[in-house]
Image (tube, rainbow, N blue to C red; front, side, top):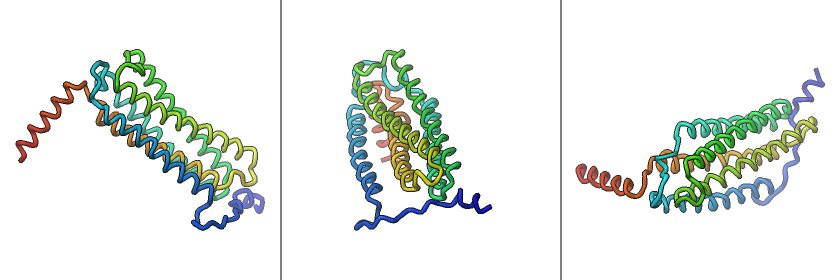
Length: 226
């Protein structure tokens, strides 16, 4: 009985005395995520600036499959839940649960990447390559970098899972998993923005003429209201 309680006892972590009150490693991760916000912000801004300016097709409305991407988005968002459960298991010292939830997160992350590979291949078959038009260049750059971030997160979680499996006496610590969780939640939040702008809003763009007609239609509606 005492052995069972010890196995699930949370590991003792020494609090690091810092001037900010936040662990140095965790603070460094926040700084990195802040710089990554600027990086993705510039890519998203570039996409929005060139949105609807492609003079040759295929256009987003011709190839974007919103239902498929909605499924992959749901999978990625659910991985955030499993990551939260993994952090909770690490803090409570339950290594078995930690490994289980990390594996669930890894599987869902791989599922998201699988959807992205399928989408890229489908776009290639439809004739949309990186150099095809402005839409393809900005789209592949933005979603490709996000996919690279997710892939890096998957490898990170795999390393943590291996460490947890080989060291059942309290490693990795709750802080180690918490830092990885911050990164994982960040890539999920970034994808929500990308999915909204590229798919739900920009996924129905059908070229510069259609965009001009949409603006005219909007002006006509606002004219009626005013």
